[in-house]
Length: 381
Image: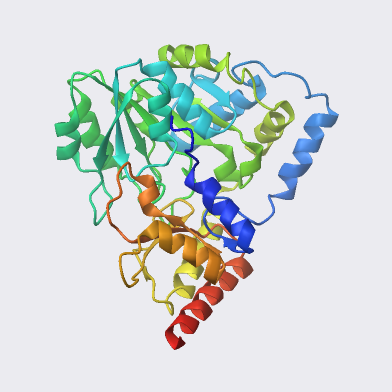
């Protein structure tokens, strides 16, 4: 790993703090969690859930997840053999990779891709092989995926709902992927952390719902993204027993176990959670942000089908790339966003920013107002 490499999220959040900017860069809400969830955390601690949890996770939580996944996706999951609780989904992706790949293996990644994927692969001594999504629609290009497969390909990382583009894979994409991988031994790591955040009356299709893919897949989920409590850093991985066993061999020597009172609270809250109310809330924020940005010079791409994020194209004179423009927007307009080229191994030249709309209405209004004021000031100048 390069000694000076720092994630773009750290860079832009630090810049936002330095300049008093509204942080629409990092994917976390600025509104409160459901008070019931906070009370359950206190309840867990007061009832003695304060010591190490079992390495695989509290049985209470894994049993609750078994019921949740049955309701959510109509699939049976074995709570003790196939569910592993992890300290966040990014960690879950890492240990899933560590369970599946060896030095010299190739792991295929579809770009643009969440920025932890490539470093994780390299840290394990494997080689990332990047394949671009369709540049206009950000849908998977199965011909290019097929061309990139080799005898060294050990795993494929997929992500839906997608970060950073907000696209969602329909069931047909999973069917095509299954047909493509059928003659191979390639295994799949499916990043599904935004699984509840799918809009416009559509639904999330999980790799767990495809019987053929499920047998070769590790699906990674995040409580932080679904329950709006990213600071709790709790996620989970669902995988067949053979993959889960290897994953746990790595997990036991890294984190070993996960925050116990948080696991208690999450187990209890799963029985109270209303996913439809969450989707309506987040879709309303997406629509509001989309409308608020219309008077600006940004050209917003079609509204995100899922996730926390909206992409917007920008025009600027000269050769200013999206990294430089994002820094200038933060410093001068007081609004931080993420340059989309940060999600590629090699810059593409695209002039796109990713904005997080999982914020209070007042935050989104203030951000749009700051951008409009900044653009007017520059026009007058």
